[in-house]
Image (tube, rainbow, N blue to C red; front, side):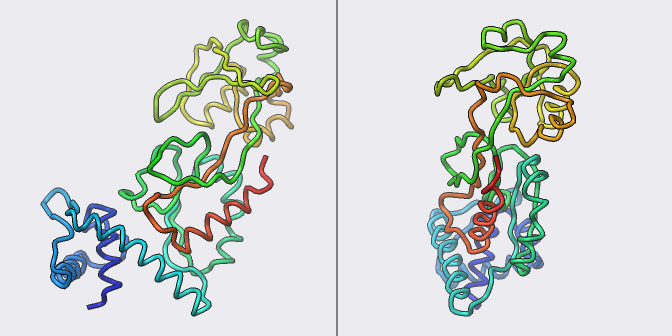
Length: 296
């Protein structure tokens, strides 16, 4: 029995909670996975996974063995690369924040593909919570404050944020000069997909963070709609500067309250805390750090 192959099969079934999804990931027949796991459990002398028609669940032994397996497989891959002088290879599944992907990652991606030609990338786009283990994702790129303790986050950038509005809006409501002026203004409110709450407007005033509630009849989900609403003259918005840089240059929006900017937006790569980082993930995380090194 190929023990390493059996460990990889077990890990993928465990993570996907499905023989069918694991078979698709590994590009193997489902029957092969079933046979391999049965042999592996017999060889170990213990049951690793409980199977039913609806669900695959780990046993207590399976839980403990999974943690050892992912560490051993990652260390084995790393040792092979060190002694054979090879480059990381295999499939890498990542989930990217849409606007960050469009503005920073995808334009630079040819460099990564050329540097690591044996890595096969599978990329999805979202800004929602992703269950990395259940969905078979190796790492995610996210903007904003991290809150999920089940993930390890490596901050790779702090992006400058601005408050802005269209010239038409500013002609109608005037340009705010102080935070007190904002009580006469209108906001396009951005709604969190995870909490369904409005993000507050934030300003750094002499090193102190101030939150201001601004009236507004429009609430939106999604960065593209948010930016378009400001361009249409529907209210003030706060967002990273890179997202509106072109529109500012074109005169479609104008930055206001420049001496009281919002706090910078952190950008982080996240991966599961209970998994040894594989060489594929490590080089991708390091490369993202290079991509965002000059971002502002």
